[in-house]
Amino acid sequence: MKKENRKKYTILCLMAHPDDAEILSGGTLAALQSKGCHVVIASMTPGQAGSMVIGPEEISNIRRLEGAAAAAVIGAAYYCMESEDLYISYDKSTLNRVINLFREVQPDIVITASPQDYMLDHEISSNLAQSACMAATIPNLKVGEFPILEKVPHLYYADAVQGMDRFGKPVESDFFIDISAYMETKTEMLIQHKSQRDWLRSISKVDEFVEMMRSFSARNGAKVGVAYAEGYRQHLGFSYPHDNLLATLLNEYFIQK
Image (cartoon, rainbow, N blue to C red; front, side):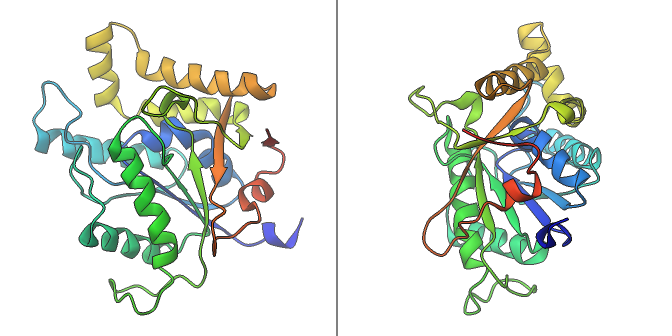
């Protein structure tokens, strides 16, 4: 085994809402956990807007528990940053909370939402993750109680929801992870979000929540000749790592577009 695979890597998946990580990256996270990585899932909000019939405080409590249950399927930890659903802001206090999370978790890899997506909560969460990757390494940013990151983590953007930006145009992935072997685990993670499944069932009379996820994963898979896949782009800006650590850790599942 290569030297870089002997270290126990820490993976942080930061998304806007509970269930986003499972929908967009659940298979990849399950694969990483199976390789011995320490996986942490975080949502910027508890998703208090996610019900037509349950009040915001109660649905927030329910969805925090669902987020933790979904993470537990793969032995991952779950954090909530406690921003308000639909009001995620890029401001000092919010960024500081994310920096503090990064310093606590000490991730080697960060996976976040696409910076081009259908709603601002996703895009702003992506921007916060990008900034925190670098900001968490800066000693003069006196944020929280945890030590700084020693290096900028590898940063990856998951697919936009349904692969489209706000104009309905495709957001293309640079590479894919074959998640065929982990699709049932990904599905098990997602169905822990029962409040969302029941909500969509009551509206559409079909289990659209799970079916949409599986259908999109299958469409990704068809692009690269496998049953199911998740797509990614790597942040390659100045000072960010340019080697593809995700490809190294999941080499047998990695498919270059």
